[in-house]
Image (cartoon, rainbow, N blue to C red; front, top):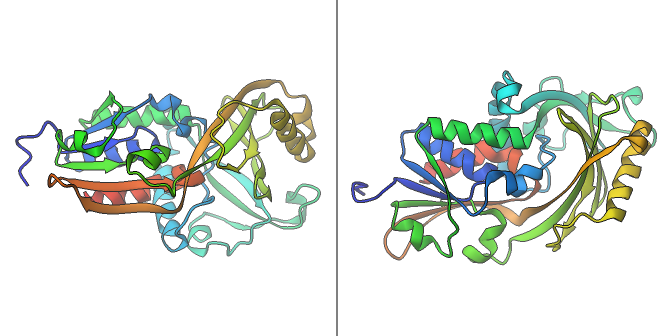
Length: 319
């Protein structure tokens, strides 16, 4: 299809980590790309993510491993310049997780192994120790935006009510709208899963730690340049973006059982984000009524950062 009559080759709907990485892949392959974002990247769910590179609450399992490994390769390279990219390699322990929980993933992690008894906090009998990318998302989203602009792409503040609007500007539209896909597609299988975090001053923590507590609670502490991110919650169906004080206290108390110094650490910030969860990630191509191409790339749940580059390349192949 000739693109001469269009203003762009591709419009990507959505300006979070999935939209920006997809736009970068397309732009760096020579496509004229515009990102239409309803809100600035710093106001997206991506911006409040703890952003430990780890497969979490995402399906289909048979594809996630390869997407995560491809993304890991990209983050490993970006970790060479953490000041610019926001990506660092940090060692830590994922408790109550066997080494073979996802072999294609753990085999790709340099030095991944079972944690020894002295590497586990009291109360945990098993864990997986690994060095993985840990991402300062606000810095990283800025990096992604700059990289896209350098490749000739553009980011525009623009909300859409349907894909036909974008199809009038470009012959290919990529739907990276995350939770917005619930109404935009519409896809009722997309639902919010609320995550609440607490950011505190770092009392000297250098390694990350994470452990599942229950279907709705997680314990984790992620040392970032701006403090330690403490988590968290996983509350399906909640649209509440207001930080709950009782939940915040419970998060700090759980984390302080692992690192007692956290009990007195000064609270810097409360964060709440809504993970765009779907039974399985949707990467799929369809033809619009007017003849344009629509490629879907949404439903990444709590692992959008972890699979962003792998999914971006899969979507780009369909575009």
